Amino acid sequence: MHICQFRVRVCFLALFAQVLVLPSATGQQMFRSDEWITECEAAPGKGAPDCSITVPFWQARAGQGGSFALVVILQTGSIGIVGQPFPEKAVLRVDKNPPIECRQTRYCIFPSAQALAVVNQLKVGSLILIDVITAKGTFSFSLTPKGYQAGMAKIRAWGYRFSLD
Image (cartoon, rainbow, N blue to C red; front, side, top):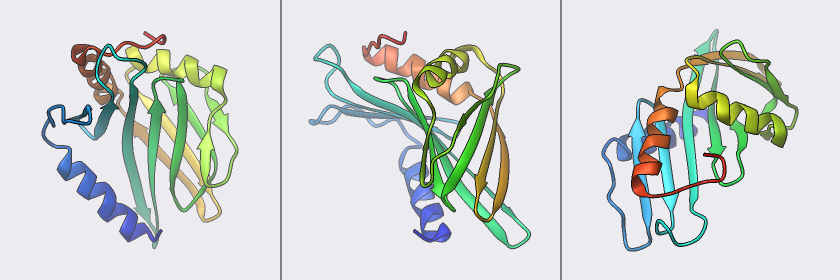
């Protein structure tokens, strides 16, 4: 996908998610805080919900740009980074905790045990540092986890529970 197409899709999703979408007949709920987008599918209390929290981030410099998203899948505690140009490696750090690293082309998924530790760090953290290494260069980002924390509070308010809580 071309970087402009990716940005258009991210912008559309961001605009669409600016208001809280009430539960639909399919049991889908969405909430946005800052740039973070929280989504759940399934009725609360009826089996494991399918919830994720995503934050898009991008950078343009010297004629090249990168658009990425950090995705947290709450049922499993999985964390990944996707985007354009395709990540080859990513390093993620919350506050002064040890960084975690993934090395996969296209979809960079962090190792499970390390990802679970970061999920716990995001609950109380104040700063996220991300380096995404691609064939076109390295992109560095800093984010706040406040939108993630607000998303988790909204998920609990909707009645969803996870073993990660």
